[in-house]
Image 1 (cartoon, rainbow, N blue to C red):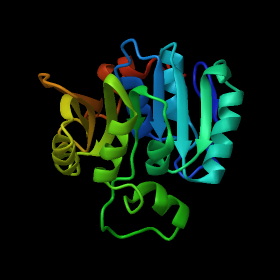
Image 2 (cartoon, one colour; image 1 turned 120 degrees about the horizontal axis):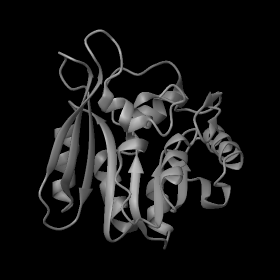
Image 3 (tube, one colour; image 1 turned 30 degrees about the horizontal axis):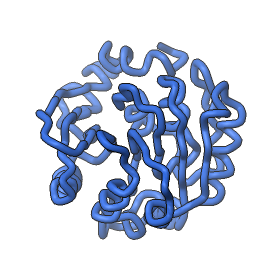
Length: 232
């Protein structure tokens, strides 16, 4: 059980556990005046819980793993915002093809490994590899569900970002915000937080460093996550 300042998360059964990637995206994403959000591949529901804490939005959280959806529902029910959180067992492409709901923001820690060596756990493989949800399918489905002026925010490996950006461009979705994440001072970026939108926008780009050279957390990371981590 992970305890945050306003909620707790059990991730024992989920395909995707509580991790730095999810916490970064949940704390970083710009929510503006978004009223309806979609969390794709919710796992234990950590991102959905974070964005619900940060806004007055209603959040649909979907996943293809039954155990993850069951655990997300339990985590939502134990939170102060259960009436604004809804977990669904559904494939994203099917959901987009049949659904009529429109979303102001689609948020995801997507499966991004492509043709790479797979771990022995089939559930984790499905959550991390893009066999069932490659970048083209993700953006095509997202466009079906975005409300006018809607946005998409993702956390990706820095090395995978050019491929996802190219695919977004082909769907007329342009990167309007990008934060390169450095794990420790002196290292190269290992993750990239990105927001895509339709239309013509300038790119707001910056860098976030998590640890100083001595291993302590930077003020930048503390300020980003201070509403969630008990230690901050």
